[in-house]
Amino acid sequence: MDNEYEDDDAVRYYEDPSVFESDAMRTLHQEQFDKFVEFRIRGISSNVAFAKAFPRYSRPGDLRNAMERVTYLESTDWYIDEFEKRLAAKTAQELWPVNTAINRLLQRVEDPAEKGSTRVLAIKELNVLTGITVEEGGQTKAGRSLEDFYTQFAGAPGSDSVRH
Image 1: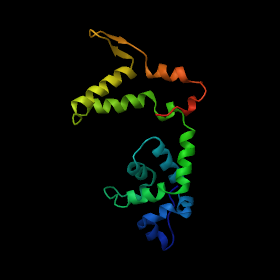
Image 2: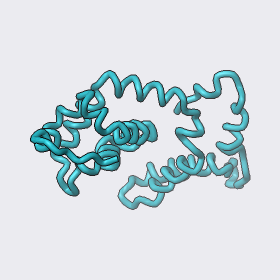
Image 3: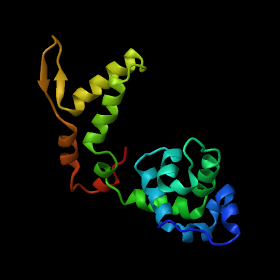
Image 4: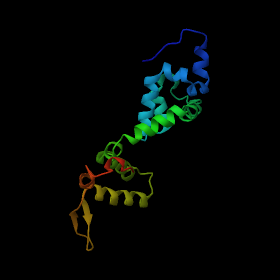
């Protein structure tokens, strides 16, 4: 749903970041506002979430107003309420699936720009998540995985409120 403007306000809507706090803008681009909220809940940075949800307002290499637009959007009562409502409806598994956790740690391990100590800590955490434990004496064995952890809490009272 990419609405084209057919009036003289088109330039103002494109250039003025403050329109992102208006109900009129949200009504006009509700689908994009909803996408932005979902991207933010998934932990995507605000500038990337904005570029993905509002490509029309994000010129490649020119995000000069993006952070201002995000600030206006995220400071609205609608956004704050909607974010909290949707976040509360998510389970821990939806917010932080095992494969996502592993992927983020692998990024740290494989990034040559990371400090050695950060990479070692990421390797240790990966070992825990994938069920590999190292005992004293250097022996490696399988241990409890994150999937086991989630299984333990599945269906338990308050399990939907477990957050990272």
